[in-house]
Length: 167
Image (tube, rainbow, N blue to C red; front, side, top):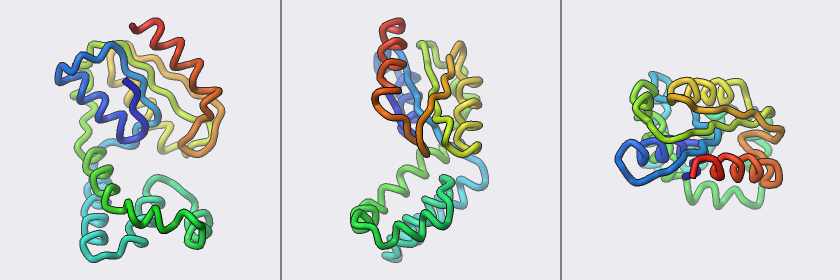
């Protein structure tokens, strides 16, 4: 099972709940829980409930480490309406991340690979390292890529190699 960002926590939870996962590949799970995560979750809920979707998008982008100039530049991008349309899902994303419990992942028994991008902010790379340390026997790979992203041609061989061994 492959989980990207907060999807990494969903994949970890699925493995703990007996879904029949043979191996986990986790790409840049965000920082788990904590006071900052709880504050973000409440802020996103409030902004979305008030219909301030653009502000919710920008609050989320800032929280994941996008530079302010990049956030400002995206206000006029052609995909901005799509980001605002899916703003309610950011609440779910923050809720999953806020509920993540690294100590719980010590019970994971399937092979795991945690991957991060060398170009991602230290915050995401540190969170990846923490998850890799929390999951018994997890391997960790740092790959060349962009912000919270690695090109398919770089990531795919790692995943194929890992799942070939895990399965």
